[in-house]
Every structure is written in structure tokens, then in C-alpha cells.
Length: 250
Image (cartoon, rainbow, N blue to C red):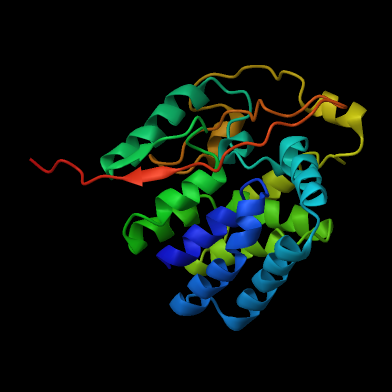
């Protein structure tokens, strides 16, 4: 499961020539571990094939339109949990502390709730705990999968594979609440601007968005503030890196 989570993490990073060159290695890791059922493996292989054969500029443009410009597809997990709630700050601190308790140090500028970083973290902790944390976020993962599937985008396979690894089923009420939220068209700039307008800040555990925040380790979000302005060049972000060090057990 650990190698598979690392592969899924890599597939959700910004497309690069390095990622394209790594596709044979990613396939070998999936096949060597054999953690996915054949149906999931086949769908993931389609996503890998798109990466290795696609035009890099087109792949990057699609990534930005989907995950940077479209709030309903944000890869920051807590974008879908707390909205603009004040709770996000402390919860982000809690999530970073969870990483540190496992001896993991973030060596990139990415936020702790960025999904590629989160999946890489899960690949470094015991499987039982990783499955529990995936289950806590399963309503977010499933909503993202459904939205991507509606757009007929191969990235949907990544989200189904994460849930399959944990045998996770989302809570129906939490999923329904997410799916009631607006799902913007990334080509509709007016709708995107409206979606990214500041929301009213709510306080305390009684706020509506706090109801589906999960437990201690997964409790917050912060908006992805790097969406590019129309017509402006997009700087290629680096893949989040997590380094492992032995936790101090004294």
C-alpha cells in the first residue's frame, strides 16, 4: 500500500517532464506491490498513459484549469471542510503537528492539507492509521471523484484508488452536503470570480462547515491562493517533498 500511495501522490502533482519519464517506474511500483484490484489498476493505467503520451503543455494547462482555477476541485482538502472558517488556522497547525509526531518534516512551501503531500505522508505511517485518515476524508475524495468523472477526466481514477486502498465509504450526509455546493466551469471566469469571493467568517465548533471536519488529525483547510490570473504565465510548482526522520522516542 505504501508504494501505491506514493504513486497516487505523484499523479496529483503538477505535470512535468520528470513525471512523464517516471511513468515506467510508477507502473512497476504498482505492479510490484499489487495493492489494487485489476479494475482500479486498469483505470489508473489509462491515466498513466495520458501522462506519458500527452503534450506536456496541454497536460499542464488542464491541471491548472481543473485544480487551481476550480474551487470545487481544489486539492487542498480543507477547502472543502471549513470554507473561510476561522477554525482552519488552528486545524492546519494540528495537521502539521500530526506529521511531526510521526517524524515527518515538510520540506516544501506547500500547505499541510495539499492532497499530494497528505498522500505522501500516509505512505510513511502504519497502514491501519493511514486507512483511518483516508476514511475521515472519504466524503471529500468521493465528491472530487464524482466531479472529475462528470468531466470525463482520468484523474478520477486516482481518487477511487485511494478509497479502495482504505475500503472507505463516505458518510452519505457529508457527501450530499458537499455535492450541493456549486461546481464551477473552469472556463467561466465570471463564475470562478464569484466562487472565490470572500465568505463570511464563522466561529466555533457550531459553524455549519465544521460539522464534517473529521477528527483530530483532519480538521481544517485553507484556500489555494495560487490560482493564476487569466493571461498570466504560470510558474511550475515543485512537487511537495516529505523527508523521513526517526521520531525521538526518549
